[in-house]
Length: 524
Image 1 (cartoon, one colour):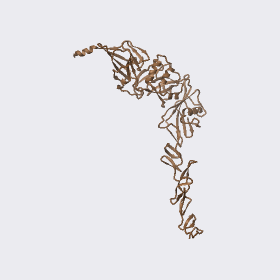
Image 2 (spheres, helix red, strand yellow):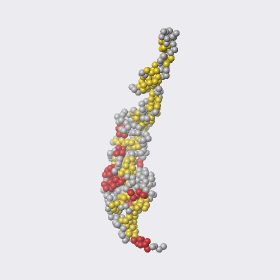
Image 3 (spheres, rainbow, N blue to C red):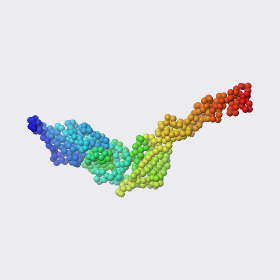
Image 4 (tube, one colour):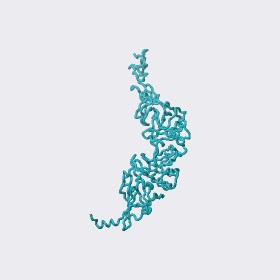
């Protein structure tokens, strides 16, 4: 097929070069400067030089020979937004807002993204209408501005010499069996801070499908570290870019030092660290105590020596349960069949073993820890904590036992009594226990007591509010029987018509005032 002259002319004007000269990488505070002698570009947050090499980054330059204006096509860039967190999603249409292109501090907008691979985790992009590559910076920013991070403890207590790889999970805690407190790292600000402070650049490893498609990545002193930051210096940068590091500080203490922030095959990123000068640790996992409070790693108790159970239980109350239980509360502890039970007022604390260490047989003995056959390792015990409430109280949203309403023996909450403490004297009405008919509440003893025999109901012992017998009338809280007398059961006994008053023996006075009752109580 013959080409038209105009088509041939266009092809003649365009020269396409695949840039394949020797490539070198320089690490600057701006990012990773990739030099190839033809189009030097600074890449930010796409990985270090090794990432570009393993992912086979290619750059093609298309030049208009007449004007000298050119386009560059960049292939196989790591899409770090893909699966950054377990639920991260990204659309191809979002790439122009996330991949920022600047040249000498001016934003370039003539940029397109012809390809985003869900299966490969890579993107291709085209930067159009360039006259030079000088000062060209391409920066990847993250749609999820915070990275969800689980902080873990490496029990060996020595930072590994070779950091950027997976380790045996049994060497770490808190346990995978229970949710631990997640914290959040500012991804965009944190990477900039690490690059400028330590010269540390994110290292992307491989694209995996476990727990959703995502890139494995590592940040540590074992990554490109041009300013030779120490682990402590690295962690200071990491720590100040958490928005809620206090959770980890509360859990693992001030001496915790994280040495790598990474995401591998797990559902979320995690920070591995050690506790400097740590010897013994008890990890406490609290089971869910209500619908609001989920199970979680609750507390850690650190010590230089193995703890007696009494010391452990005291510190458990003071350091772990201070929001729930008064630290001066007297708890009665007992250990039976490997479980410890503490009772106080309306609360019951149950402690059972998990997969490390065990409780002693007696409350006066030492807690049993697991050890690792490595010098300076942490001795570990893990226990599971359950909180429950004794009868007459319920668990509120803060896992505290709160008293049911007055006279209630069992309740769902403060508004719903399930069972009265004394069902003989009280009854549940609208979720509250009130006295049954014929009983009043004694304000001193705070119990329901029976009214006087003639009262159907009463406000106190001496004041009826209704009379038992409908024939009785009430005067100043007292039930009386007109033209009758009251039986021992509080009922009115109507006198004989000849009587004006009577008792159980007969007339006391006669209706005919001229007569008096005889010895048999009769008015004749």
